[in-house]
Structure formats: structure tokens, C-alpha cells
Image (cartoon, rainbow, N blue to C red; front, side):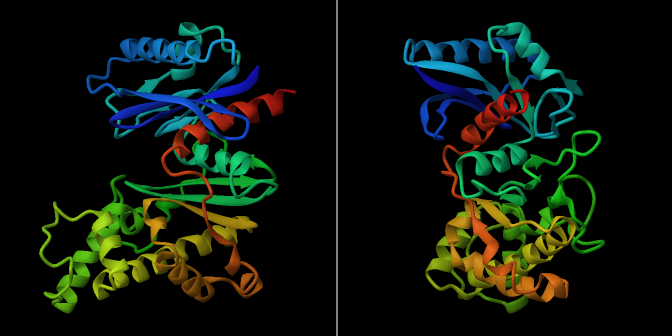
Length: 326
């Protein structure tokens, strides 16, 4: 039988659950709603039922080794989700212990935050195979990150290390979802790019831009990408400015951890060199002399498949746990 792991990605709206083999291929997947009412007991029952249904569909074909879970504000050490701002659950939810009670047949159940799960997935299945020191930046609704040092995720003393998205970029700058002004996330997330677009439209009075007729609520990051591909000057400038902002944050990360590579994951990376060229060009300005030159080629797009990356990344926690406990 094929050895597999279950990956669970807990999002604000939906929870994706999939069966992943050791090559990182998703054999079966589904999703359930993440509850809006904060009812944890019903949610745990729903996860347990869905997990069993998925595995029953592959009965006699696979041998499941455990469950890996990626979630916002997830603490690897405690197995808890703690005060997640975009989930309806209140306070601290002992997710791992609750799942162990609901589905005791699984010896390995591991939890970490979604960006850490993506970094682990990159190391097990993606472009970081064989690397022991690298960083993953995830661009989406927020800016997340996972830091790998000497082949291990950096959790810090309390389980919450590695929040590169909350690096102070511009003191007193834009408000961030965390409540502090000026963080990298408020400039380089999908919402941050939208805010940059409107600042540039106003600054250049760019009424001829493809973005000019969109209201703030209508504009999406994909609209910026589509316009940039068509050569729209404002959209291209959004990517240039965003790349420069990212380069500032990445330079700090390189100074702190001296990684082999920095991988970038998320929707904006579909723009390819429209995003990556400004990052690499700006990075040189912000690096200490001892880092100049040798890091430029190591700003890399993730090799995880965007649609399945969250499930695959979460599942990779199982293989790491088994390796650590061998």
C-alpha cells in the first residue's frame, strides 16, 4: 500500500482536506465550511467525518501516516490555535488534543501556521529540496513567512517566531490588520498592492490607466496583474514599487538568517519577472556589502502548485514529525 499523509488547511471561509502521497501528489481532496458561529465541537466532528470518508474512498490502497494542519495563529508547541483574528473561534482552541480524541487512530497530528506549513512543503516537495537554510514569503490577504535554519523550522521560545510580514517598513505608515502602522504586510499583501495602485493613480492623475475606472471595492489584485501584462504604466509601477518594498523586507531577513534562497509564493508571483525583476534589482541597494551579488539569483518562485500548496504543505508536517521521531 502507498504511504500517505493528510493535509488540512484551515481558512477563514473553508477548510481544505486532502490525501497526499510522499511525492507531493494529491490523491483525493475536499473541503468543508469553516464555521462562522465558532462552534468548535461541531467543527471537530465534521473534520473527523470528512477524514474518514476520504480514506474510505481509498480503502486498501493507502496507509495514512498522520495528519498535518496549517492554520492562522497556530502554535506548533502547544497544538493550539490562539486568538486567530480571521476565525470565529474565541480565544485558545486546543485543536490537536481535540482531534486526537475524535480520531485516536492517528498517532501523528501536527499543527503549525499556514506560512510555516508552506515552507515545510517547499523543503519536502518543492524547490528547496536539499536546502537546510531558506525562507518562504507567502503573499496573499496578508504576508506570511516561514524560516528554515539548519533544516528545522524556527518557532522561537513560544511558537510564534518568523513573522517577517510584520517587519516595520515605514514607521507611522499604512495601518496593518494587526493594528500597528507601517508593517510590510500593509504594502505587499493583495490589499497593499491595491492601496499602492490608488496612490499612484492619484499621484499621476492617470485617467488613461486601465485601472482608472475601478472603485476601491471593485479593484482586485488580478486586475493589476492583467493590466500589467497589457503594459499599463500604473500597473507596472505597482509591481515595481511592491518589488522594492519586498526587497527591503527580504534584505532584513537575509541579514538575520543568511539563507541559501528566499522563495516567494502566492497569487502575485503569477506575474513572473514583472514582480521578481524589481525585487532583485532593488535588493542590491539594501544588502550589506558581504551579502551583495551572491544572493541575487536566489530570490525564487515557489515550486508548489498554487491550488494544492496549502494541503501539500500541511501534509509535509507528518513526514517531518516521523523523521524527528525515528
